[in-house]
Amino acid sequence: MSDSQRRQITGFSNPTIKRLRSLREKKHRKREGHFLAEGLRILTEALDAGKTPKLLVLVEDAPLHPLAEKIEQATLDAGGEVIETSEAIIAKLSGKSNPQSIIGIYADHPTPLAELDRKLSDIWLVAQALRDPGNLGTILRTGDAIGAGGLILIDDCVDPFAVEAVRASMGAIFTQKITQASWEEFLPWLRSGEGQLVGTSLNTDKDYQAVRYSPPTFLLIGNEAQGLPASYETACDILVKMPMMGKADSLNAAMASAVMGYEVLNQRRK
Amino acid sequence: MSDSQRRQITGFSNPTIKRLRSLREKKHRKREGHFLAEGLRILTEALDAGKTPKLLVLVEDAPLHPLAEKIEQATLDAGGEVIETSEAIIAKLSGKSNPQSIIGIYADHPTPLAELDRKLSDIWLVAQALRDPGNLGTILRTGDAIGAGGLILIDDCVDPFAVEAVRASMGAIFTQKITQASWEEFLPWLRSGEGQLVGTSLNTDKDYQAVRYSPPTFLLIGNEAQGLPASYETACDILVKMPMMGKADSLNAAMASAVMGYEVLNQRRK
Image (cartoon, rainbow over all chains, first blue to last red; front, side, top):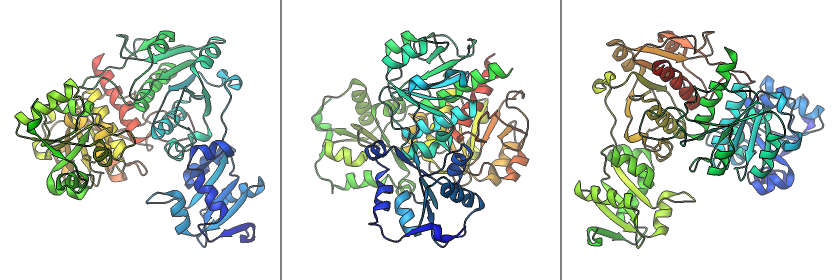
């Protein structure tokens, strides 16, 4: 790799650095249609999924990991830009105590609901009014693990392309379909084809293991604090609950999606 | 409730306010043996578990929720102190955009390994070198849900009494036993009585549903990035893995504990 193909940036006030920092804010991500991903592991997942950065940021004068070399080459081959800068600037960009030495800017890739092909998988995750980006990213990672097709975000959810969500997804942001829709859009779409809508709820006595799930299964996860609105529960084909042996009455939203998701997967792999 | 039993604090520089803020740092928590819990839901869980705050902080001139009234009375009955202060100071203490209006300082309550009674439950969670306080708190919450006895923290884990961990535990910090030990202490203790040590690992082909778990089961969860050290895996009675259908090779540590924990629970409730 010839260094001449890299552009060097030395100052915090450089417009590219400012742009990178701006992508930590949702309004700038929305305007640009781009988002940040950090770290060799996640960028490698992106490459494996056929996604290359529009802009790749590397630490100057540092030996490059072979996987990072591959990402750099792929970036250039796809017409992207590679810049190198100081560790201090990267640390500032990353905002973490233990900063990553490789950062990519990627085009976001939401899938419009009308273009979502439910036949891609027999399990889909659906989250409603999710507030925490770490939960969202973890649900994406769980979706990847159980072979889900993607995550459909209903109503006003946190941005799936937020840095924290991308980080928690461990790369699943690049492999899972991501669709955003209102409930009023989602429900008619769902009913226009095959699909079982399963809600987890406190308002049922039906045990989650007492149900045979039919594909494609859409697992609906409610807001972290409120759970699902009553009218959404009514629209479900079935409501189930997980046993709760302790004092609390519910699991964390990401936990619930993992426990439910593995139950559906386990029924099908038997 | 007579307001005369409350002490009013109006300034940020008040020593009690400074003390409250200091408890966000581990060194101050350790020195004092106290920690912070925030929010009516978690403080109510504490009360239900028989724990009252040494110091309770309320918003001045605000109508009190009946549950908060109960907590205030219990605090005073137990010889604790109640202070009231402005919303601005509470917001500063809380450091959240949507601050809680009730905060308690509690005595921490680690259980020494030698005093841990494994007969209390037939499932225990064991985490090694856990780094993320949100993961730790979520694992406590999962422990509560599956009826675990508690969480044993091996080696250098994040502080279970950190504000983020307490928050993510949703009150399980008060109901789950919490024990900290080195591996060199834990393993002889485990082998001095009954107990099956189960590790989740990439280094096995054994499916997690193909095993009959025997009580008491100790589920060992590795560090978020590295997983378990090889010698720890060797010490396990059995290593299992969960099916991974996607690109990633592992679940988030808290997800893994939830999926494993529900499998053990499900086997026993059948």
